[in-house]
Length: 283
Ligand code: SF4
Image (cartoon, rainbow, N blue to C red; front, side, top):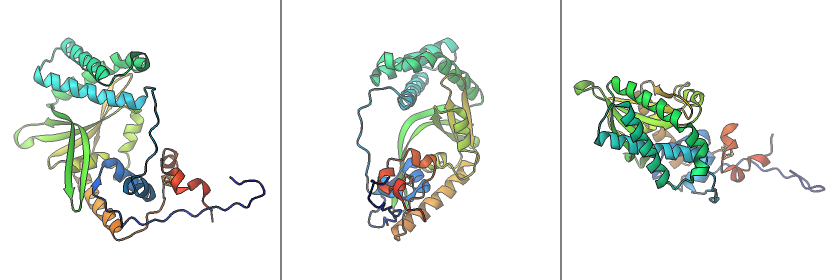
C-alpha cells in the first residue's frame, strides 16, 4: 500500500543466517516450520519471537482437540486399571472421563455445547473402532508422554499422544497413534505424498523401537473413528533423521534462511509481519 503523493519503496525478501543461534531442541512442529519456510524457523524458533497472547474466552476446535486428548488418556488409564469389554460399562467409563476432563479444563458448559451435542456420536464411533482394534490384538500401553531423544548436537522433543502394542513375542510391535479431529480428508491427504508429512516419522524418531508402526487416528466429531496408517514408518524415520542432520548442519555452516512459504502456509503464519511478504518488490 502506498501513501498518496509518496513514492512506494518495496522491500526485498529477507535472507538472514542462523549460525549464531544454535538449535538445541527440535520439535515436530518446529521442523515442519523449517521445511515449509526457513525464515519462519529463524524468526519463530531461533529468535524465539511470538505473537502476544490474546485473551480468547471462546471455546474453539483447538480446545475440543485438547479436551479429547485428555478424555481419551483418562479413559484408557481407567480401562487399564479396571478392564471390561462390556459395551455399556465402557460407554459409562468414557462419559466419566469426558466429564472429568471438562471439569479439569474448566470449560463452561454453555460454550462447550456444540461439541457436547456431537459427543455421543463421537464416543460411540470411537468405542466401535476400539473394539475392532483390540480384536486385532492391539493393547493400550501409555498416553500423553513427553519424550526426548538426542541426535547429534540437537535433542528431538515431543509429546506422543499414545502408544499401543500389537502382537506377542518376536512379533511384538509398538504402534504410535496421533489423534486428529480435523476433516478425515485432511488426515488422509497428509500421507498421500511420501516424504511430505514428517509428524509420524518424527514421533517414531523419539522412540527406540525398530518394530514400529505409526498411524493417525481421526476421531470423527460426528461419526466414525478412522485409522490412517503411514507405510513403513521406520524407513520414513531413517530418512527424516538424515534430513534433520543435513538441514541443521547447513544452518550451522551459515546457509541463508530465505522466506519460501507459499499459499496456505503464509495465511496462518505469525511471522508474516516480519518477513514483510506483503511489501516485497517483485522483479
Ligand atoms: S508469511 Fe510465508 S514467507 Fe513469510 S515467514 Fe511466514 S511462511 Fe515464510
